[in-house]
Image (cartoon, rainbow, N blue to C red; front, side, top):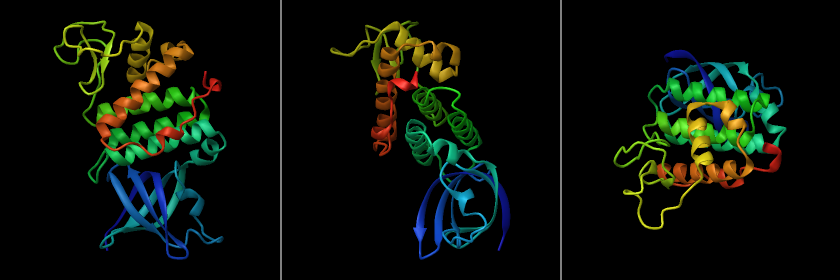
Length: 245
């Protein structure tokens, strides 16, 4: 059977039999992979800890009829242990890997892979607040999947901004002429924060206030749920406490 190697991040795992696991992976070159890791639940397993969610590994696999089989695993990024020590980081990472699972398919998805690995690395190093990191990841992952929001010009007619009305179903901010009656309005600072999260402008994002972060998070969550059609199960559990600032 064909053998191949690839780098991959673990999205989720399921028990199989008494000692095996089915591992869902987002890989650098082969897109999303579902593979069997045999014996990883045994105490003596050589690479069980390397195949936990949020971990990044260099893998050797061989192609099976329905599921590939993992034969080797070398750790590249041990982010799982550090992330799991902090509840806010853990819940944010859970939402990230669930999103990655939903927006990627079997074909190659290098940009999604790099985005997810970078976000998990940032969470493990506490580079930014977990809530900010998650919201930035969600906006950028959706943009890569073809659902890029606009937080400057009108999403419907293209009228130059700034605008204060947001319609997630349309794709971001809209001008007064395009805004349906009763459309919620947001502060310019919140619009600026959303743009900073989408572009990766961390200096501006870190300078934002709690009210703007909370408002932006609600918009990001609504935008994500709308485009993924089914709600993310992990998103309601995300911790967004004051310690995030």
